[in-house]
Length: 173
Image 1: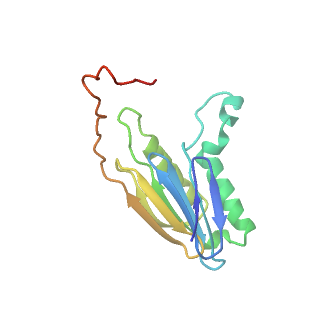
Image 2 (image 1 turned 90 degrees about the vertical axis):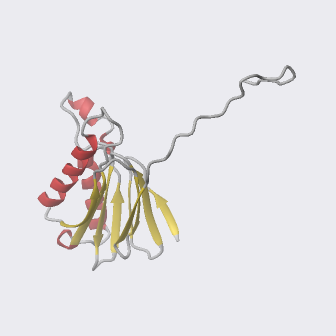
Image 3 (image 1 turned 30 degrees about the horizontal axis):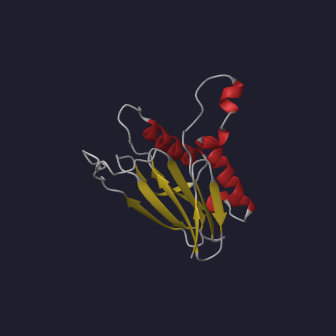
Protein backbone atom coordinates (compact mmCIF):
# COMPACT_ATOMS: atom_id res chain seq x y z
CA UNK A 1 0.00 0.00 0.00
CA UNK A 2 1.11 3.52 -0.76
CA UNK A 3 0.74 5.81 2.28
CA UNK A 4 0.35 9.55 1.78
CA UNK A 5 0.65 11.60 4.95
CA UNK A 6 -1.39 14.80 5.09
CA UNK A 7 -0.10 17.57 7.38
CA UNK A 8 -1.66 20.89 8.40
CA UNK A 9 -2.72 22.94 5.41
CA UNK A 10 -2.46 20.07 2.94
CA UNK A 11 -4.89 17.89 1.03
CA UNK A 12 -4.61 14.89 -1.27
CA UNK A 13 -6.95 13.20 -3.74
CA UNK A 14 -6.55 9.68 -5.11
CA UNK A 15 -8.53 7.10 -7.05
CA UNK A 16 -6.07 4.20 -7.18
CA UNK A 17 -6.68 1.07 -5.12
CA UNK A 18 -4.02 0.54 -2.49
CA UNK A 19 -3.56 4.20 -1.58
CA UNK A 20 -4.00 5.21 2.07
CA UNK A 21 -4.31 8.86 3.05
CA UNK A 22 -3.34 9.35 6.68
CA UNK A 23 -3.03 12.18 9.18
CA UNK A 24 -2.60 12.83 12.88
CA UNK A 25 -5.06 15.23 14.54
CA UNK A 26 -5.47 17.08 17.80
CA UNK A 27 -7.63 20.20 17.68
CA UNK A 28 -7.21 20.26 13.89
CA UNK A 29 -9.88 18.70 11.71
CA UNK A 30 -9.63 16.40 8.72
CA UNK A 31 -12.51 15.90 6.32
CA UNK A 32 -12.57 12.83 4.09
CA UNK A 33 -14.76 13.13 1.00
CA UNK A 34 -15.65 10.21 -1.26
CA UNK A 35 -17.67 9.67 -4.43
CA UNK A 36 -18.70 6.00 -4.56
CA UNK A 37 -19.58 6.11 -8.27
CA UNK A 38 -16.34 7.74 -9.47
CA UNK A 39 -14.37 5.77 -6.83
CA UNK A 40 -12.33 8.80 -5.92
CA UNK A 41 -11.74 10.39 -2.55
CA UNK A 42 -9.65 12.93 -0.75
CA UNK A 43 -8.65 14.22 2.64
CA UNK A 44 -7.70 17.63 3.98
CA UNK A 45 -6.26 18.79 7.30
CA UNK A 46 -6.93 22.28 8.59
CA UNK A 47 -5.67 24.11 11.64
CA UNK A 48 -8.30 26.81 12.14
CA UNK A 49 -11.90 27.16 11.02
CA UNK A 50 -11.90 30.71 9.67
CA UNK A 51 -9.58 33.72 9.80
CA UNK A 52 -10.13 36.13 12.65
CA UNK A 53 -11.23 39.63 11.86
CA UNK A 54 -8.29 41.80 10.90
CA UNK A 55 -6.81 43.49 7.89
CA UNK A 56 -7.14 41.87 4.49
CA UNK A 57 -3.40 41.15 4.50
CA UNK A 58 -3.64 39.45 7.89
CA UNK A 59 -6.58 37.34 6.76
CA UNK A 60 -4.81 36.34 3.52
CA UNK A 61 -1.59 35.32 5.25
CA UNK A 62 -1.46 31.56 5.75
CA UNK A 63 -4.84 31.00 4.09
CA UNK A 64 -4.04 27.32 3.52
CA UNK A 65 -4.38 26.60 7.24
CA UNK A 66 -8.05 27.66 7.33
CA UNK A 67 -11.02 25.37 6.86
CA UNK A 68 -12.77 27.52 4.28
CA UNK A 69 -9.77 27.23 1.95
CA UNK A 70 -9.11 23.56 2.75
CA UNK A 71 -12.70 22.58 1.99
CA UNK A 72 -12.96 24.53 -1.28
CA UNK A 73 -9.64 23.14 -2.55
CA UNK A 74 -10.61 19.56 -1.66
CA UNK A 75 -14.07 19.75 -3.25
CA UNK A 76 -12.67 21.34 -6.43
CA UNK A 77 -9.88 18.74 -6.68
CA UNK A 78 -12.46 15.93 -6.43
CA UNK A 79 -14.72 17.53 -9.04
CA UNK A 80 -11.70 17.81 -11.37
CA UNK A 81 -11.14 14.03 -10.95
CA UNK A 82 -14.70 13.14 -11.97
CA UNK A 83 -16.59 13.31 -8.68
CA UNK A 84 -20.05 14.87 -8.56
CA UNK A 85 -21.01 17.12 -5.67
CA UNK A 86 -24.37 15.37 -5.21
CA UNK A 87 -22.61 12.01 -4.76
CA UNK A 88 -20.03 13.18 -2.24
CA UNK A 89 -20.12 11.79 1.28
CA UNK A 90 -18.14 13.43 4.11
CA UNK A 91 -16.53 11.96 7.21
CA UNK A 92 -15.22 14.42 9.82
CA UNK A 93 -12.50 13.73 12.40
CA UNK A 94 -10.55 15.64 15.05
CA UNK A 95 -11.54 18.81 16.86
CA UNK A 96 -10.23 17.66 20.24
CA UNK A 97 -9.66 19.95 23.21
CA UNK A 98 -5.99 19.11 23.57
CA UNK A 99 -4.69 21.92 25.77
CA UNK A 100 -6.59 23.51 28.63
CA UNK A 101 -6.78 27.26 28.30
CA UNK A 102 -6.65 27.31 24.50
CA UNK A 103 -10.36 27.96 24.23
CA UNK A 104 -12.68 26.10 21.93
CA UNK A 105 -10.46 25.85 18.86
CA UNK A 106 -11.20 22.16 18.26
CA UNK A 107 -14.94 22.61 18.73
CA UNK A 108 -14.97 25.62 16.37
CA UNK A 109 -13.08 23.60 13.76
CA UNK A 110 -15.53 20.68 13.98
CA UNK A 111 -18.55 23.00 13.94
CA UNK A 112 -17.20 24.76 10.85
CA UNK A 113 -16.73 21.45 9.01
CA UNK A 114 -20.29 20.37 9.79
CA UNK A 115 -21.71 23.75 8.69
CA UNK A 116 -19.71 23.69 5.45
CA UNK A 117 -20.81 20.15 4.57
CA UNK A 118 -24.47 20.99 5.28
CA UNK A 119 -24.34 24.28 3.33
CA UNK A 120 -22.83 22.51 0.31
CA UNK A 121 -25.45 19.75 0.38
CA UNK A 122 -22.83 17.05 0.97
CA UNK A 123 -24.08 13.92 2.75
CA UNK A 124 -22.58 13.48 6.19
CA UNK A 125 -21.30 10.03 7.06
CA UNK A 126 -19.30 9.23 10.17
CA UNK A 127 -18.09 11.89 12.62
CA UNK A 128 -15.54 11.28 15.36
CA UNK A 129 -14.97 14.73 16.82
CA UNK A 130 -14.30 16.36 20.16
CA UNK A 131 -12.95 14.74 23.28
CA UNK A 132 -9.45 15.30 24.60
CA UNK A 133 -7.37 12.74 22.71
CA UNK A 134 -5.41 12.85 19.49
CA UNK A 135 -6.53 10.70 16.57
CA UNK A 136 -4.80 9.02 13.67
CA UNK A 137 -7.03 8.80 10.61
CA UNK A 138 -6.49 6.38 7.74
CA UNK A 139 -8.64 6.77 4.62
CA UNK A 140 -8.84 4.51 1.56
CA UNK A 141 -9.99 7.03 -1.08
CA UNK A 142 -10.79 4.42 -3.74
CA UNK A 143 -13.16 2.50 -1.44
CA UNK A 144 -14.26 5.31 0.89
CA UNK A 145 -13.34 3.32 4.00
CA UNK A 146 -12.04 5.24 7.02
CA UNK A 147 -10.46 4.16 10.27
CA UNK A 148 -9.85 6.54 13.17
CA UNK A 149 -7.61 5.43 16.01
CA UNK A 150 -7.87 7.40 19.23
CA UNK A 151 -4.61 7.80 21.13
CA UNK A 152 -4.84 7.17 24.85
CA UNK A 153 -3.20 9.15 27.58
CA UNK A 154 0.52 8.70 27.39
CA UNK A 155 2.31 8.77 30.69
CA UNK A 156 5.04 11.37 30.81
CA UNK A 157 8.35 9.94 31.88
CA UNK A 158 10.96 12.28 33.31
CA UNK A 159 14.42 11.90 31.89
CA UNK A 160 16.76 10.22 34.35
CA UNK A 161 19.87 12.29 35.05
CA UNK A 162 22.73 11.19 37.25
CA UNK A 163 22.94 12.99 40.58
CA UNK A 164 26.74 13.07 40.72
CA UNK A 165 29.07 12.73 37.78
CA UNK A 166 32.29 10.86 38.32
CA UNK A 167 35.51 12.89 38.08
CA UNK A 168 36.53 11.01 34.93
CA UNK A 169 33.25 11.63 33.07
CA UNK A 170 33.31 14.01 30.14
CA UNK A 171 30.34 16.27 29.62
CA UNK A 172 29.60 17.41 26.08
CA UNK A 173 27.26 20.23 25.35
